[in-house]
Length: 68
Image (tube, rainbow, N blue to C red; front, side, top):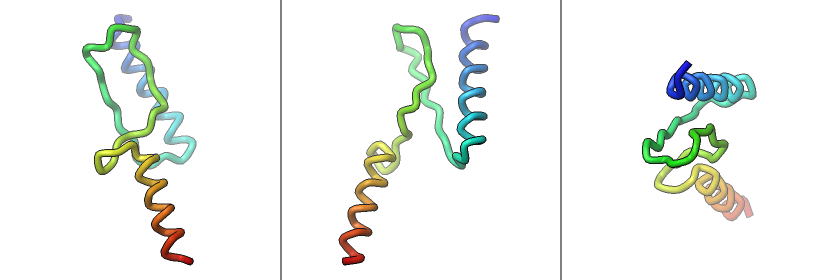
């Protein structure tokens, strides 16, 4: 098995695991210029130009301020 096949297997295993945990939407970003060994990251996807976790936090703060 070559490196690309191993990477695809690793990505699919990660996505399968996340789906089993209840994730309904995921994205995969590939960095062809990466110098180190390819790896699957748990970093959250980007939404509206920000990390999705940051966007969710902003929406939570907005929601909290509207409920007071």
